[in-house]
Amino acid sequence: GRYVATEGLLGPNSVLRQMGQEPVCLLGGGRALLLQLAHPLVAAGVADHSGFRTRPLERLQRTLDLMRMLIYGDRHQAEASLRQFHSAHARISGFLREAVGPYPAGAHYSAHDPALKLWVHAALIDTHLLIYERFVRLLSPADRLRFYEETRLLATWVGIPSAMIPPSLEEFRRYVEGMLAGQALAVSDTARTTAWALLDPPVWFIPRACAHLVRFVTAGVLPESLRRAYGLVWNERREGAL
Image (cartoon, rainbow, N blue to C red):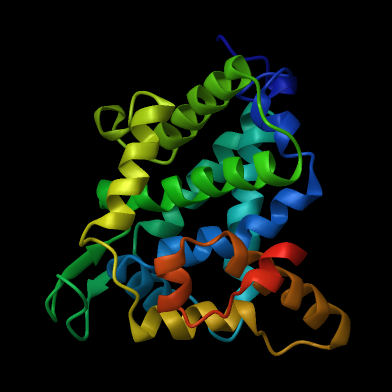
């Protein structure tokens, strides 16, 4: 085939491989998750089908493990991770218990819904690029183009139809901006409770210091409307510290 197993699915010169070597990018996990949870159907699925509230770091770890295998693993490791991903998501479906935003009580959600998959994917990709370019370096136009083409491949591998994936980074950004400005997102009580399980987890001193850093960065890089909706405090002094 076109892939060499030892080089992984994206190849040794992948921009995503280079970006993923920067540990600071892990600080974007909180932002990505809160963006995802801002969709009521995503929040309901996470709350109903995971132990996130009692084990908040496990879902984040599973996401990171999948991304690591897709970006750094060989072909066999990547394909095994994808099979596990699709199998785990096959049973995730349910109904909203109460109305949230434009969604009535009883609205159905499914992990197979490509629109929900696209938003979950977009939250990760938008955050990864934002954190990298804010705290590491700006990508060149060529690298930015390669970055987005690689993320489009990731999107197809997790089951998002190609026709739904914005064809360019500019259109991707318009999609994200449209979601943030439109009616599709509404931070529910479920989302807030789930988010705070990550932002203020019941852990000991050293992990708590790390959680404080994640909470600080998350608040600083979230869109203002979502920052307020989640009840995160921000001001000019904190912006300067960031």
